[in-house]
Figure (cartoon, rainbow, N blue to C red):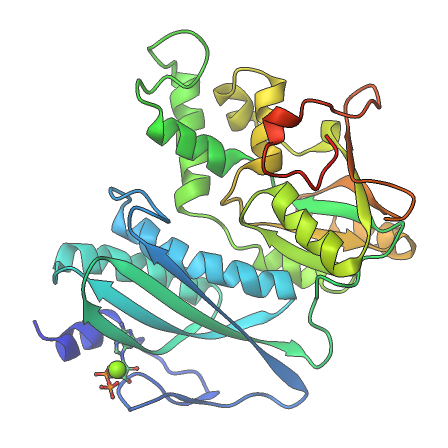
Length: 335
Ligand code: ADP
Ligand code: MG
């Protein structure tokens, strides 16, 4: 199979949407930007062994390569439209390609995001996707607009992907409790957390609601504290987080030794791809009313004045967490 057949077979979508003048097969793609919209674009590369474990199933790799990009669009409040794919393959392995393109296509079609072109080369496995979306002019959700009093919210649950990674890499496969044999419950929890890691759900649906209310938004890819710090620095504010409000899944709670480990994973674990956003107090009641039943969101803290306060994380007694070692590397926070 040569490169052209490969592209034709695995990366040519059936029906071309109206806003695509020409896509795969010409020298470059031509697309139509709707009036009163701005183009929002982002690129992310996944390298085998770095961004996913080498034995990750190909459909999960296809899914994740697009999901992490869609997550960036969600964080901007943008609607996905098109993407390009630069694929570096060590060999032409049709079983792998079939799985990869199926995982990619399923997520792409779910979000009406159309593959308009790419590049195919030989080398160590690596996948770059550049995604493009649109947002109403002037309405992109930036990091710089958080104000004192805004509530800090997060979608979904935190720390699951980190727990999934931990269980993949735990040598004796018994990261949990004191026995080597995993119970049915633990195996099920493993599966749930590994699914979060390998097949993250980009929060496009949630973003569609959040974008009407939020002052800032970011997706959590490097750990909650790390990503919150980006909002705080860009906006020139501080934050007070309530550690007891962190949304933790029952799967995570099954896999960890205690509450402290769960909190640690939720605050610092990567690859969650949840949205972290701020809601001005004046819009909070409205937001809560509209989001109810449509998306899982949790208030975990409040934006405070940087001149009066440091960043803090409180425990169940309202005391400031003091064990800094547990959150090493995230020293913007006074914990
Ligand atoms: P050129 O040599 O003109 O850059 P290529 O041979 O790289 O063209 O690609 C031919 C066509 O196939 C182009 O339209 C390109 O966008 C598309 N293409 C190449 N690789 C991929 C891929 N992995 N996925 C989707 N489209 C691809
Ligand atoms: Mg090319």
